[in-house]
Image (cartoon, rainbow, N blue to C red; front, side):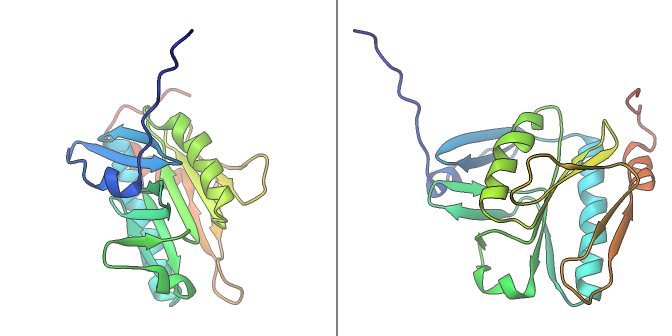
Length: 193
């Protein structure tokens, strides 16, 4: 008789007890995801996008933008920490002192070497299933954004600009991607493409 190894399953509450500041702990469907600290291009992209989104939603009175580490609990066994997320005013009732309960309007993940598969597969499937209106996968190496929406079978690939208008009647946000990626790679060895 063959022995089958049991893979441990985790809850969001259990994962919150893990304490290593060098690592990010997330859980999707009970599966533990551990990511090392990201590098300079990742952090620059996260910082720039958070600043742009934060200013836009404040100026338009739409809601709030948050930056990691900040937890989004989607189920008892599913809690993630998107790099950047936007919560619209109508979703504010699900915001607690500790976390957001339920899906935000926009999730942005900036991929790094260690997160490519998780961001493009597990998190994409999760965010689509949970009804996140837009999920942006920002790839500094390829200098592009992959925009996913619920039900999409392929992303919209954006290399020049991202346009976002979360509510009818509000001004559109336009983010120029060449300038963003120039800022991300400033003073660093940019990838050869």
